Length: 247
Image (cartoon, one colour):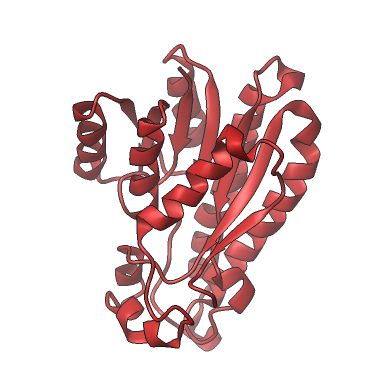
């Protein structure tokens, strides 16, 4: 058995990914920030189906909490084989005139610094250079990194552009050490994150602009993530899967 850490696993894409990884036989480390009930619900669903999972609380923007989270994973006694960097934040829709430094830095701290910190600690455990057994990392980016999210979330889009660069650079840096690093770019997916942006019904409002004429489901993104982590993708690194309905 091996451990898969999924950040932001208590809801949305993270939750769907945790559930599917458990089916694949991983022991799932369910990271959450504050909603312990949602995290325990995910764990209960996994264990009721015969899988293994445990909760790890951490705000990934806080280095001390990230270190503590990985220490708790180490104590489980199984190797860390997979990391899904999924935790992210989105603030209310805004044009650039109304963006504050505090908001920009808060978005970057979680969506960029948090991903870097989790990648760093995962590499220390997976890399052949550090006597690890190898592994795979999937970074959850966004179609916004390509599209820019004008008039709504330019700061969020920029953070996901940084995630794309991290994915490309890290894939090249650790390829010879047994670690594959890939990304997924979801588009309009039915998750709670839109409520954080002040428009819970955003997907339904704009889905007609998509070539496929519908929003996506978290499970559709999770399937791509699980494939990238699997041996079926053993020769894939530095790649991105677009999950945006054709946009």
